[in-house]
Length: 161
Image (cartoon, rainbow, N blue to C red; front, side, top):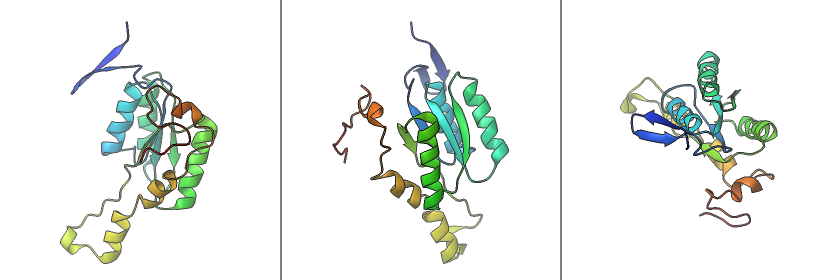
């Protein structure tokens, strides 16, 4: 019988994502943290990305490892393509692949939309574009295992778009 975990939305099998490797940007707080923890509860190994708040990221990693999954905190600014490329390469090297990518990171500006400068708006609205554009069209070379997974609908050499 499979183990399960009770959540506010119901019961999740703890092995639903077993063997999957997830990268969640902005995972040291808020929605990113909740997403990372949900993936971990379902059995995925998780990389917690953060740009600031190392202690918070390390706390999320501690909580994830308490579920019996692998977890690590990687500092990278997802608005900088070289940092995204480095983070993804590091994850592939350390975890073997990236099966799940959650592009959650965003910048919070403590100003009303109508009071933001153009520069503030541009930084907040494009903060994840290098991460998402780096992920699109770039598939780790050794990710055939993910594509052959029975849960994955993408086949090697074919586009899911």
